[in-house]
Image (tube, rainbow, N blue to C red; front, side):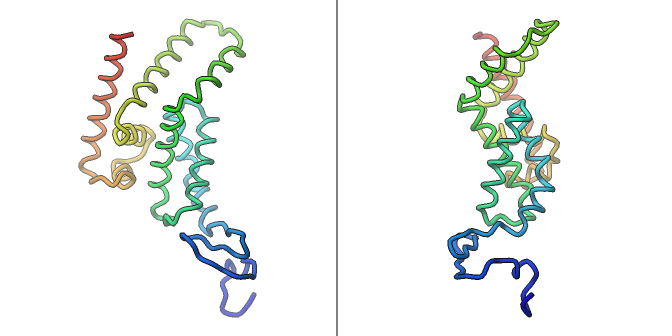
Length: 193
């Protein structure tokens, strides 16, 4: 190791170095954030849980997590701010996927390939209820939907407040309003359906 250089800096390739938008480029190659692995290991379960809460599918939630961590790798968000940033990004990305309708084709394909379940009536009712809740969640204002998803994904009021840049005292109000709006959406579409 060169004298006066840290172990991580010594591992960087030698060449012309440029710093642009918080990233270090060496000879046209970008160097991975030094804190990425540590942040990934600590935050991955929560990111997947938040996305799964919205999407109802662990496989799709893991795809969302991959996209979120790729986005995080390109930011200058500090490791201390990462958990909140990642949770909000997971909720936003999952809601965008939910709203986009791209899931419809894969859902229909999976349904046609599944074997008939023993009690299909229970499965249909359960799946229909989940679909209705997810559709209503997608119609909520984004801030309310994200607050609701984060809170019901196990984040504390303080964590939700930090992630959404709210005062801790207003999180409860925001979540209660979101729950009321969700119930209203469910009732409105139940009456019209």
